[in-house]
Image (tube, rainbow, N blue to C red; front, top):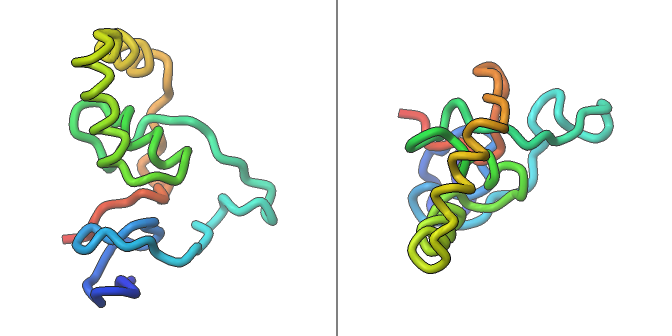
Length: 110
């Protein structure tokens, strides 16, 4: 799949381009469209993770860029001090997404 703005290759199902940051047109991943009866579930990402996949899972669920969620999480950690506790709780509570599921906030394929 190519970015509509910069024409660089990005992962299938990406909501945003990794290179230029532009939002991509909506394409439903196979098996997850409301027409087929699939629903979104809040899960940790198994493919786009830095520590445990919590931020990427939240970004996928809310259709946001994972970087935005990560920055907000760091701000919550430093400003309120509860960011670390909330991250650990979500790490324990959220199930890990299956490896075969294509996340909507997928990263660039190398």
